[in-house]
Image (cartoon, rainbow, N blue to C red; front, side, top):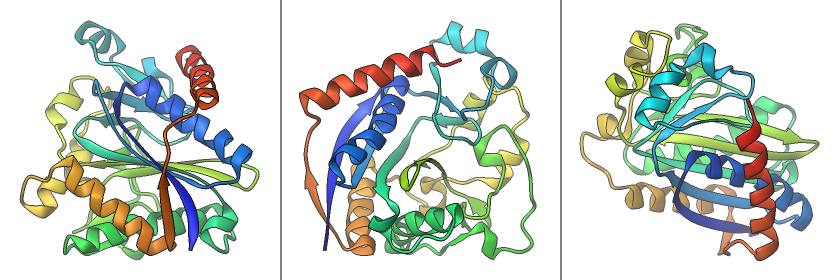
Length: 256
């Protein structure tokens, strides 16, 4: 059994959430203990891929007028609106998850616990690469497009995942929507979202019922333990780690 550190950090503002995820990478490098985190977002807001220009993909003036925060991730990919969702992050070495021959291998291995979570709810999830007839779409909005190891249910993408790597250390985080409010998102995203409405889904849609954050997060935690044969030890951030997070928050807030 592998010892993992578990962090349940509640709901935090977008910039702070991204600062914590970035800091996890360094925490793992210093401690060599792999980390699994579950969290939410308050207030709700957007995260953008590292290479995205906010003014090119968002109506920035509308976001600012309505008090909708947006932040750039250290990972790639497209825009995600973080509202009613469960979010996770992982910081680990390749050795913590098994033989890894490529970046795609790491995605596949790290997403296995998410597949297991859906199966425990009676769903039939699969990777997009397993659907040879899927339409290959490039989009600025994460939920409009399919990458090989995006997870689909009923032909629709549910959530999105992205990675940052530092040598053989990986930080991966992912968003699983409980509900999707496309009319709200459409108000702020410049790209038309007709494809997202067709190509994406949410937990409420696939389960046909309301599901509390705590219920899904609990099953996700159980699935993580099962898939990775993990022993989770919950531990809050130390004073030194909070200083590290503060440093990363300053970096995130300066990022343009």
